[in-house]
Amino acid sequence: MYQKLVKYTKKYNMLQTAGSQKIPSLIDNARTALSSIRGQLISVLEKYSQLKPTHTKYGTGVRTTYPASSSRDILKTGQEPVPYEPVYYVADVVISSIWAAGKSPAQSWADPENPAEIAAQIAAGRKRVTPYGTSVANQPFEIINGFPVNPLGKTGFTGRGELGLWGANPAADPIIFRTINNIFCVLLIQRADGAKEWAFPGGMVDPTDSTISAAAVRELREETGFSVTDLVNYSLGMVYSGYVDDARNTDNAWMETNAFAWYLPAEVPSNKIKLFADGDETLAVKWVPVTPELLEDGKLFASHGAILRDAIRKLI
Image 1 (tube, helix red, strand yellow):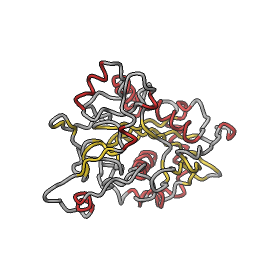
Image 2: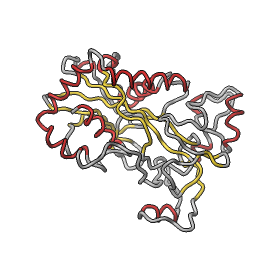
Image 3: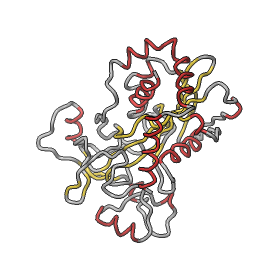
């Protein structure tokens, strides 16, 4: 599995470096659509450096509310808690989803409570998304006393919180651009959890996904009903790979993502694009105009605003 992910990532990196016959044309079309607000977008991009790993959310849960943590509260002020007294937390949904032989993949996506038991699970037939100790984004991290250490430091919580895997939890984010009535738009969903924020229609990579890009397309279909089948013809490649400033992150478990972008030109028939919100994970789905305001921090879920800036930066 992991070898396939690495191979696919390398393929996309080569595609971005060498280019292809389609990508320059797609980018030219996208630049034309963005030309009327290019200057405004650049002024926002200049406010922010290219996306670097950040760590600011400090444990506001998505499915549940994380317990109180005085160290977390001090970290949120920008200070260093002394002594540092993190709270161990693992959500019930994670405990109930620990892998066991005979359980379906949908019911067994979590590591055991003791990471030392992961190898035994693998030997018993478990298909883990990545080997324990491996970062999907190739970002190094330590393992101390058998437990992974968040590369961005303290969060006020140990354990896994609401995340299933010890260490890096890989996600895939599809970013779909389209021009509608000469307005450059991006496809967003309104999440049904947490603060009901707007986000890319992405999600966790499953052990059954053949590649991270396949996970992105699967999540796109599941969360939006998006029905364009030949996305490869409109691919702009991978626009980000790395740490995600996710509210669920702990000292021992954190989110990483690979974000892929596509641009659908006007000749893609509108009847191929059918959107629906499932009401379970997504409350709404819609094409949202890309404006300077949308690129500002705080407008989108987790690091999605910064990832969107990186995608726009590469286009213009």
